[in-house]
Length: 461
Ligand code: ARG
Image 1 (spheres, rainbow, N blue to C red):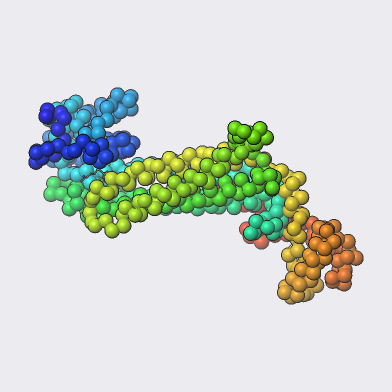
Image 2 (image 1 turned 135 degrees about the vertical axis):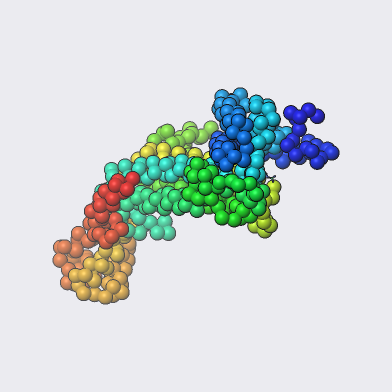
């Protein structure tokens, strides 16, 4: 076998690895996504080796130039990734030998693939978290825009999918703003824990070379170097944190999608989608189906699956590095791609929903949604205890139901049958808009409250 085709460790091996394992064990098709991070980290490592006079500056310079050339080749799609060189790290090292010859042999001084891979991976997760944070921000912005147009749109609020109390459509939408704000924070919080540089812990025990880990840590954009070499090569908490944050966010997106599917259903007809968010049927000419919302809901399964997989891979894995860890990257990449796409789709979905305001108001008025307001009125104006007032209000609901009337259809004399001492003012209590606007406690659905919140959200965005 020519040197060019040999693996870096071939010296001690009589046979090369089996063809089937070469294919199955290679991660290059997955981890080639780390090429920029790998080259960046290799350059920083080389700069440190030069600075600390661990390798001759002349050789170091060749390495840096060679790495730049490799980056260009990959960018231009001219780099041929080879399975026989297993992963991105060895593919790049092999190419470096091809370009600069034996000088390439100086690059891997005082490091191992074990610290190399976790350095690249952390850098990638940091960058990708920022991308998701941006997508979440844009989703939050679109929610605020939609909410602002619907502060006074009254809809039924549901519990148990039964009409509960009148709420503002804006208030409903802004509930999701809060969820996505927490999702964003979860990714941001992760950035704090991930902020330790693994580079320089080598295989598992550190190194006897006089390296400068503070230098590489700073150049790579980490806050400080990690403290324990063994933990460093076997820690994948940051990948789990990332996939957990993805899974929670996907869960929120799924709930939003499910809400929209229900509100858009022919049974509810509370919202419509622009045709851009709908697909037709191959057999039923009348159909307009909300496929994007359904995909958002469904793909949450992928995000949960990736989290579950990585937790299972890590469970019971002895310290420190094992090949099991190689599959962490595919999971994280898939988790990222899936969430990013669902965020993009959700952004479009929010922009393309049209509330059916007449139907919303209509439905808000059905199902005796102001029965609680009447009870509250009796407590506040007539000094009844809440439990007493609840009974009176239940009786009114029974009466209205029996007579097939909404609460706001009742006349003063009908109401008086249940509580003598009321005047015309009581009629306002059954108005759904009044009900909505009476919920003025902090976090409640009154227009005043919502306007205040929108102002605050705009500031924080
Ligand atoms: N491709 C490997 C991975 O992703 C790189 C680390 C290899 N280290 C080793 N000791 N075989 O985990």
